[in-house]
Each structure stands twice: as structure tokens, then as C-alpha cells.
Length: 375
Image 1 (tube, rainbow, N blue to C red):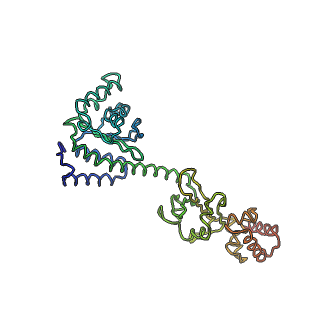
Image 2 (cartoon, rainbow, N blue to C red):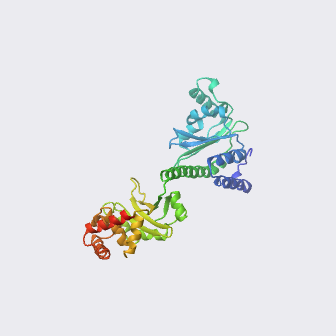
Image 3 (cartoon, rainbow, N blue to C red):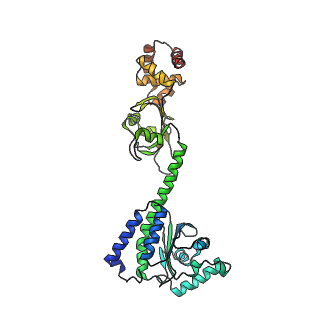
């Protein structure tokens, strides 16, 4: 697009092209795809030969380079090292503008003078000056001072400087590009975090992180194999029952919350598991607490103890209590683990003693030890 008319923004054809550009940008799944769209579509549309972009601080004193389609490889080091002092960026910083362009905010003659000063200040000899800077005829630079500050410029090495309509077009397109960069940055960081978390949880144990509404924030491969649920879905109904009847508010108050919930024998359609759920409290901000959920296939000797105890007519809850008694926990600790009162634990134990024909805790532990030994 050579010299865009001053009515460019009201032209249906131009606006249609802008919408098509934005659609292509939004469809990109990676930075490399977005860079290809910028090079193949945006630069020809604005009649430019190159672009550069990077993350920056609020006052544009540091620029973390992301990319520069059209910038020659041999010029990249010099362009990157001096970019934060580029004249139009200097103008954005000092006048606190959002967009600056040659002719729009500074005349071609003034830009040429600023470029001379810029080159003298940043390069010790003419031979060190990148050809990219020498050949620049015009440029337009924009900065997004929203979260994750992004700066981007498009430049011409031939042709006329930017006119007002072309500057307006770039200013219209840039916020959409900035959103694409932010979304891709979030997606890339999340993918790295997710892969890192999966590597830490590469185990036969099924692991998931769920929020206070019991929606899945993260799961490892084993958890996904068991339940085949996508992220953000609620955990299966069978697992929800673990939390039903418990006061969620109290569970997430540090002074009232048990260290964790532990169910030695938890039956699912996929088998019998040892289930644990730990409250996770973020250190800062207003992020809601979460649950770290773990499921491990019940195995010998506990699995066989479960089967043998079932033959004695013990209920699911009574078998849980037996397992925790075998692990050496007292009534209060068992109540905290299972979310029930010590009085309820005592009631269950009386029934266990009667069913197993034992009279004391010592006899019960001996009985359980015998089950484990036989297993």
C-alpha cells in the first residue's frame, strides 16, 4: 500500500483488509507463525521492508528482543544493542506518546539529524553502523503500556516516509498484534510450565491440582489415563464425594484445616486406590487455595488386608480406620485425616472390635499385623 489516502480509515476496502489481517494474526499458534504473517502480510500492506518488536519496561529503557522480520542477520547484533536509543523510541519515552512516526511526529529532516546523533552515540566508527540503520527512510513505532509492555516498529528502506493515514492504520492494527503477542507469550510459558510439572510428576501415581471448585488445573499422564478429562473440567463425581459434607471454608483456613485428607482404600471403577488430598496455599496475592490430589493403586500388603477385612464384614470407613490404626495413628489424628470427630472414630472402633473379636487396641494391631504378615 503506497500512499494511503487520508480517508483510509473510512474506506470499506481498507477496513476489510485490516480485519483480514487481524483474523490471520489471531489464528497463529506460535511466535514463528505470527512472524511469518507479519512478514508476508503486514509489511506489504504498509509498504514496509522490515519490522522489529520486543518486550519493554514501562518507560522503554530496556527492550527484550523478540524478533525482526526483514532485518538482515548480519545487522541483528547492532540493531538489538542500540534499539532502546532509536530516535522514535526516544521520542515515545520523552513525550510519553503511544505511537510515533517519521513525518507524523517528527519531520524527515529532523529524523535524519536525530539518526546522525543516534549513530554517533552508539557506534564508534562508520564501519560498525548496521546497514539497516543507514538505509532507513522512514519508520513508525508503537508501544503498548498495558500489562506485558510491548514495543513494535515498522520501517522503510525505500519510498516515502509515513503519512498520517498510514500511521493511523498501524496504530489501528498494533493493539491486536500486541494481544496476539501476549496470548502467545502466555501460551508458551504455560506450555513450558506444564511440561516441567509433568516431568516432576512422571510417576505411576496419578496427580492433579484442582481449585476450590474442584476444577482440574493440572494433571499428569497417569491421572489423564485414569479419567480422560480435559483441563478446567470438574473432577469425577466419585472423587467429589471425598469433599462433600466437608466445610470447604474451614478446610481452607490454615488454623482449622487438617494437614491433608487420606483415604487408604478408595474404590473407583478403575480399581482400589490410596487417595490423598493436600490443601495448597499460595504465598502471595489473592489467588485461591487449591487441592493437590494423589491417587496410588492399592497394593500388597494393604490391598490384601483390605480384601481380608472385607470378609470379616468391615465397612469401607471401618477398613480406613483399621489401616490408620495399623499406621500408628491415634483417635484424634484419625479423625483429622478422615474429617470426622474423635467420638465418631471411637464408635467405629467399637464395631471393629466386635466384628474382629478383639477387645483392645493392642489386640487389634496384632490382628492387623497378622493380616499383613500372611499377605
